[in-house]
Image 1: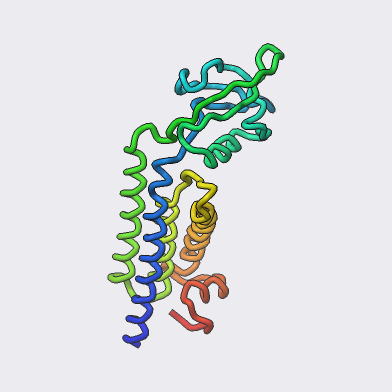
Image 2 (image 1 turned 180 degrees about the vertical axis):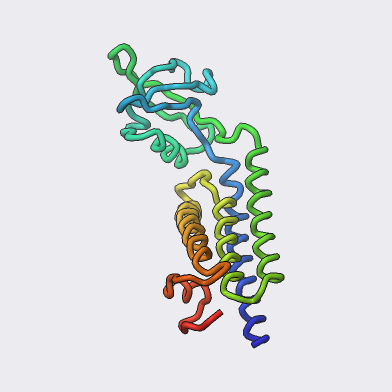
Length: 224
């Protein structure tokens, strides 16, 4: 039994360190994430310029201008702008179409850093690694049962989600696309893990057998 536990812990360590390596590789992309030099608010069905961060980067743009398109892409929502800017770089010029006084025109805006200060990024790094460290503390010092393993993997997924937050997407680097996909699935795993944990701790309730097998990496249905 002890050998099985040690083998499992070693396997967990390998998987965890591989995930952390992926997260560390992704971190520079967070620093390089671009954004538009203005903020947009949705008013009825229109996207209206609500704030301008840098007037020099978007000369000719005014508050309350209606934005029609971004680099010839239609904008169904505010989130679409954040999504499209991820595929550019800080300092890139992007053409946008606006409407003012029922007259449409095109202007060029220059993308600025998403995080004007590195303080927020450092907070992300600290919180991500802090959660990861706590997950290991629980794994090593908690009881050797399904509840401990579940909360360990749930916190690991949460820490990776924090560290792999959306960054710059490099069209020439497939890893940046992979990072966005992993971020999505780690968020889902975190929610699923917390839900499953609530069914087995402090007293086991009716949970998902399939999810239990996945979390324990076991094809058998055994007790805690």
